[in-house]
Length: 200
Image (tube, rainbow, N blue to C red; front, side, top):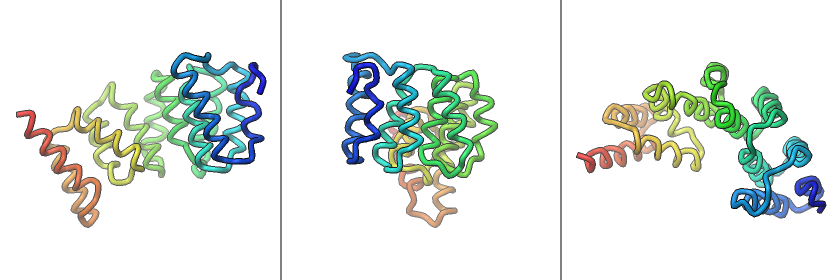
């Protein structure tokens, strides 16, 4: 592997687990500062690899590496194109990159993706609201909670524990009733109620 492109040959690795491990190794080294972030050449290689990747685990780790990068026109254009196809996996990662690296675009991102069919994408759009309309953001997160994958649901619960109130407890309970009971919304409603009571 050339020092000029740490990413370029990962896609040629036949074992999906080894591809994922190599993406993670680069992410870990750059996050800790042991190695520099990706060069433009490496970013292009990474985006090509994401486009071609078919296996879920290496795709997740490749996107994690992309999310770690600073604002980049290359990644920005890639994310905007990726989001256009509703059938692509990891679209929420593309929106997360745009939300975090280009916060001035949040109004546009909200208008485009707050009604997206993918709940993980709608969740990222809701997070765009946190800075300017936190109550609207919390309401959207409450309604999305039962539909989110586990890792995002845990993050959403942290937001609600920090900023939720009795209204959100009641809304969670109502959503649980509408869904027939026994959902993540109902379980977390009781956790949030307990948390709020402990603060008084």
